[in-house]
Image (cartoon, rainbow, N blue to C red; front, top):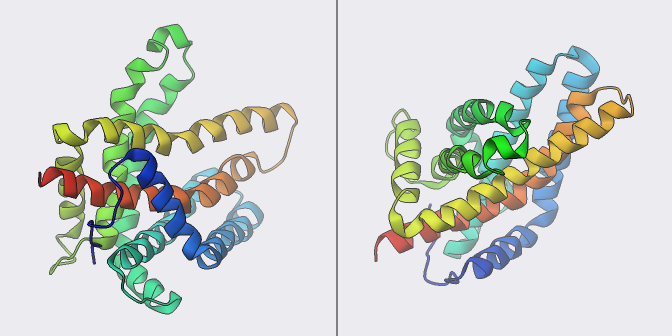
Length: 241
């Protein structure tokens, strides 16, 4: 399912532009999935369960389907293959479980460095000491793209293939600089959620966990997943040189 890389731009700015253009090509479909994801989480968690742990779990599961759909749609478009929304959703449903698993692993890594975000800037070298953790998290997060679009004969082996290929390709020296750019970009919604959460808490807003996280997560996930998908295809291209 991986798309042809011949038409992809070589520069980072070009990849950003191409990814956002591909996202915009199917924007109504992706936006509808994002809004449905927000709605499902609002109804099930914020209104029924009122449990922050379940909210996080549901966010990962629902977000994984959105991520798989965007990666698959972008890969089809890069390859120049026709695919309507039903074909994309069918393909995403087959990869949903593995994408969810990789997303959970990425979430675990995120929890490892999140406590250090709240330290004084001088204690983290003004963010420099956090960079290796963010880059590792970014490489693992790239595994969601691999899990969604990498051809495989065995679905049981796909989680190992996804993690192994994401880490091995992104860690190659030729890709390290771009991996750092991608990882920092992927982390921006997280920091936005932290800042929004602090603001909403100061305003005594109810359902803080939902409003500070879910809308930002779901609305930014699609464009960022499109960018990550093109970066992965670009990493493969650069690794072959």
